[in-house]
Image 1 (tube, rainbow, N blue to C red):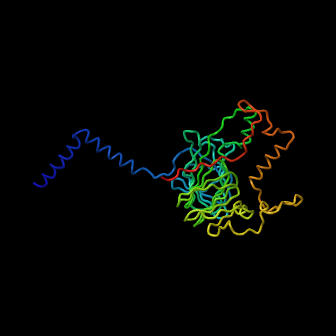
Image 2: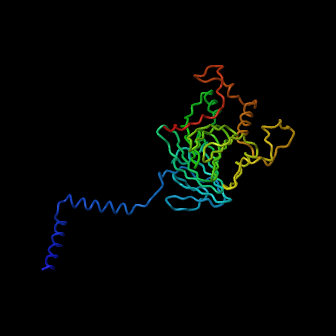
Image 3: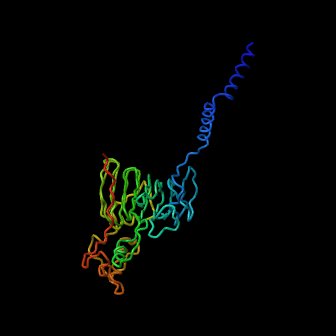
Length: 342
């Protein structure tokens, strides 16, 4: 009797599923399909399939982690959003970013990043917004990164020259570039600077232009000018230094050890910018790397003093330019400070 009852119950259950309401069967099938899709999905971090840049130079064995897989970088390796790049001791990697993500070959006046040894960073965002501006967000927990931010924009003196000569060129959008560390956020619009992260501090060294820095504790914002070094600790802003040759050499060096990094240690080399004028007959110090800002200034001076060239401020004015109007000084773009917390 019990056996017959069990068989009857099983029969009724199968009958109700096979011939029950269509909506019920559809919902059951839909639920099982959704569960199947969820179980088959693999976690991924890549935000976009657009190529954002590539490896221009490398030394040692830098690696990239993408979609939870790690592999070695090589020359011309493509890079994408959310790529995590690490450089071991003795290594170095130079990355050239496409001016517009996804546009192959668009590297005229490109932004270049140099990640030094014992460093890690993640390119969290590199995209073009609706206004045509290029937005870049980088996360660094340790290491040293040199950022030369151009994003396709020519120097101002070249733009003024073309304007005076009535040469029409399509200008690119502005840069919105930020690096976030455990203690600070630094941002620029077209300049060159270095961020170094140690276990207790963040150091921001400006090679050219102006950088805004916000500490992540008190949310204060400070502008750092060319040839200045600012330290940011766990309790906010620390000291700010005028960079001497020792600080400059430290940040130009590919060597970086986070536990012993001390760019403010007293230098044995005097800074010629702070001392008496240099003897013009004296041979330059071969151990001192040239300053990028000095090279630009010399280049502009050479162009102005060259009798075969017409200085930008002496050119015939183009349409819309009043004769005798003073030429805008060649200053870096002002930084875009982030919104203050409410």
